[in-house]
Image 1: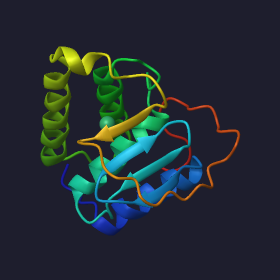
Image 2: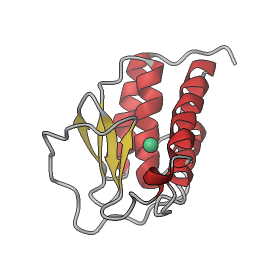
Image 3: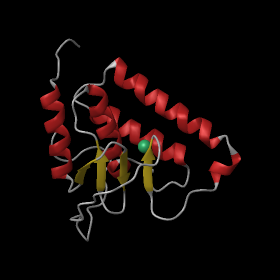
Image 4: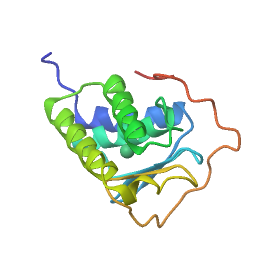
Length: 153
Ligand SMILES: [Zn+2]
């Protein structure tokens, strides 16, 4: 594939995905997602890597197995969703996804990290960030998450 996707196209793709699936976008240095509130926190999309991370966070809401209690399962499927829905999945994006998954795989192998799930399903990636501003206009009745994407591709 030689066609290129511009950063502006990536940015508007993320916006369209969130709009079509009623996901609120907040901007924060630390990326995270709230499945329950249908909200994501991302950095402004200024690179393909930021685009990959934004899609990954959306994947925590629309991807498969996001109610699994196993962090690694949720992470893997959020990346899977990102890869399947990206306008373009570059080697750099793939490497970043691999690195993040390795990070979680290491955590899972540490016993004290295994039992820390439960409570609201909030993915934190790669580390817990202070969620300062939260625009709280997520719908009371969220749409059922579909596999794959509704709306724009
Ligand atoms: Zn994640």
